[in-house]
Structures are given as structure tokens and as C-alpha cells.
Image (cartoon, rainbow, N blue to C red; front, side):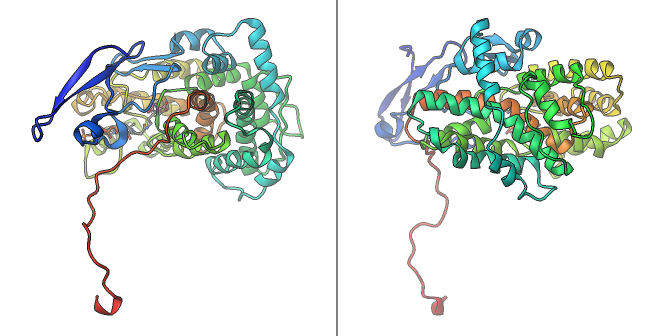
Amino acid sequence: MSDRKLTLTDPQSGKSLDLPVVSGSEGDPTLDISSLHKELGYFTFDPGYGMTASCKSDITFIDGGEGILRYRGYPIEQLAENSSFLEVAYTLLYGDLPTSDQFSGFERDITYHTMVHEKINTFMQGFHYNAHPMAILAGVVGSMAAFYHDKLDVKDPEQRELAAKRLIAKMPTVAAAAYRHSMGWPSAYPKNSLPYSDRFLHMMFSVPAEPYEINPVAAKALDLLFILHADHEQNASTSTVRLVASTGANPYACVAAGIAALWGPAHGGANEAVLKMLNEIGSVKNVPEFVKRAKDKDDPFRLMGFGHRVYKNYDPRATIIRKQCHEVLAELGKQDELLDLAMELERIALEDDYFVERKLYPNVDFYSGIIYKALGIPTSMFTAMFAIGRTVGWVSQWLEQAANPTRIGRPRQVYTGPTERSYVPIQNR
Ligand code: SDX
């Protein structure tokens, strides 16, 4: 900890307190306020924790002003260009890029755990055919503690690592099974001879009646999207995973809570909401009307896929995905008028003072759905796709939290309800 400090003086008592400044390897200086209540009798008020660091972490760094994102110090642009999702998974989990032997061992471990207990497939049948895939994912992942209860001691590093690998390996299997359930297709078992993203496509789209050929363009595009969604420091779902982990809950319960948090349209559910929004806008001529609605405080409509709590610059992931949209559509020989619409919407919004003043730029969710759609993935599965990538971040952050357990997370409040009053018997009310 640096010897920098901020002195706070209470005008009521005249008492002063030196608040130490906590500095990381980079990022904004942060006040350690842990002694504030004991010394001066104050708590702090920060709804949505916009100004509050919940933990120290070595995993992901974001500079929102500069639009910088790095996993374990490696810039997202370089990982997107040179790496694979499974190599990025290793790096997020263990801290450094793997040697070829380390990678082969990790890939073998993940491949070994791709199947789920057969009773999970039976459990899946209990959902209605039109159950939202995120409802199935949250339910099935939470239930995994009932199937993999043999290795759930979170104090044992080996059992923690096994649970992390199981979750990374099985999330695609469960997500693909949720899609097949909605299609009325039989389960597709993982084909371990295939690489991670190819294997997912095979589980999603292969049918027993005919051979399924994986399009390498689709597999590469998917692998890149998984990389871009892998981690994002203390976002709502990851903070949820860490909060649940602070109670000592098992990893499947922690990740199921993260899935539930991701589902919200303000978070990972935004990619599904963007496609619905673009379809509602319908054509470029309607863009000005919807931009006007997005600015109207009395209208609940927001530009989905726009804005970010941390990025006050272009989300570097959106830059990569927007470029990839053009490449994937061209390589698949597809057109999508929604891409043209999205780009016109972005152009008009970024020329409008309302968005410029509030530093509202496209985020990771604005363009990703265009690619999912080009790969034949239905809108209802978009957030489940986000969850597959983010599982690596959730388990990496869970491992970091479980290895360095903190006190149980328990925010305070500003109470605004009634002060003490006496009970009144019903006949006197
Ligand atoms: C993700 O945290 C992460 O890292 C998340 C994520 C990850 O990888 O984990 O990056 C993934 O969740 C991306 C965000 C996906 N959500 C959306 O695209 C939904 C639309 N965006 C908004 O709901 C909003 O921008 C949030 C939720 C993303 C951020 O909300 P904040 O930080 O609480 O911002 P805010 O609501 O305080 O907005 C500040 C101002 C407000 O106007 P004023 O009160 O100043 O007049 O900007 C306005 C807001 O009304 N605003 C928008 C807007 N987003 C913010 N106005 C219109 N359209 C929008 N999209």
C-alpha cells in the first residue's frame, strides 16, 4: 500500500482521519474507507457501487476513459488477433499464456469433462419446450451441485480447479442442449475430437438424420466472440459470483447466480434486446424517431447496446466485433440489413449531443447479435452465448475469491422507513 492518504475532517466533531490510498499496478487511486465508521462514525452511500472497489484482482484491467481492456495484462486486440478461446481461458485461470505442454494438458482436461451426467439430460426434459435458455442454464447449472457433490470442498485447491474445469467444459453442452430442447431434437453428445467452438456448433446444429459439416468461418467467429466475452472485471454478474462465493457457497451455486444476473437486459440480456430493438426500428428512415425516444426521459426506451458504466469511450470489444461483422457476412456470403441499420443508428447517435455529452458509445452487445444471427443462432440463445464465454471469467474470479477468502459481502443502507412506533390491534386501526 502506498503512503498516500486523504485527510477527512468532521466539522461536527472537529476530528480528522487519514484515509490511506490503495494503489494497484495501474488504475485510479482508491480510498480505503474501512476505518471511517469506527473513527468518525460515518458510512458511505454509493448506489450501484459506481464508485466502490469491491476487491483487489489480478485478472482483468479496464481503463474506461481510454477504452482499454486487458486480460492478465494482454491487450484484448492482441488476444483477439492471435489467441484461441481455450488459450485465453488458461491465461485467465492461471495468469500467463500457457506453454504448448501446459495448453495440451489443459485442453485434454477440458475435453475430458464435456459430457454431463445423464440425469441432467432427463432433468432438462422437465422444462417446457419454449423455456428461455437462460432459465434452463440457471436451473441446470445450479443443479450441478446435486450431481457433482463428490468434489465440492471450496477449501481444497484441487477440488476448486476441478469444479472450474467442469463448468468451462459443460457450459456449452448445457447451452446447446437447451437449444435442442426448444427444437424438439434429441440430445447431441459432445464430439471430443473437435476443438471447443467447433464442438459447440456440432452440439447445436448436428441432427442424426444427416451429416453436419462445420463451417470454419463460423467456428472462428464464435471462438473470437467467446474470447471477447470471457471476462470484464467486476461487472454485475461477476460481482454476484464473488458475493455468493464470499458466503462459502459451492461454485455451481455461485455461477448459477452469475447466470441469473447476466440475464438482465441492462447486462448480458442486452444482446438479445439489441436485435429486438433493431427489428422494431425496422428501417433507417425510422432511426431519428427512436433516437429521439431514447433521449426522452418520459419514454422508457433506451438504445440497447449503447452506454457503459465504465467505458466512456468506444468499447474495444465493439470495435473488434463491428469489423468482424463485415468479415463474417462477406465470408458466409450473407447480407443483413440490420447491420446497415445498426451502423446508421450508431452514426446518428454519435453525432447527437445527448450521446456525446454522456459519452454513450456502442458496447459489446451492440453488434454481437448480428454475428450470432449470421451463424444461425436464434435471438433467444444470444445471452446464453454470452454466458458460455463469461463462464471462464466467472470461474477465474471465483477461484481468486475462494483462494483469498474475504469477510462475507454485506453492504449497509440508508434507512428511510418509519421510526419506532407501537403495534395497534386490528380492531383499533
Ligand atoms: C454489459 O459492467 C460491465 O462490464 C458489463 C459488460 C460486461 O462485459 O460484463 O460490459 C456487459 O452489460 C454491457 C451493457 C449492456 N447494456 C445495455 O446495452 C443496455 C443499455 N445501456 C444502459 O442501460 C446503460 O448504459 C448501462 C446499464 C449499460 C449503464 O448504465 P449506468 O452506468 O447506470 O448509466 P446511467 O443509467 O447512469 O446513464 C447515464 C446517463 C443517463 O442520462 P441522465 O440521467 O444523465 O440524463 O446516460 C443515459 C441515462 O439515461 N443513458 C442512456 C443509455 N445509457 C445511459 N440513454 C439512452 N440509451 C442508453 N442506452
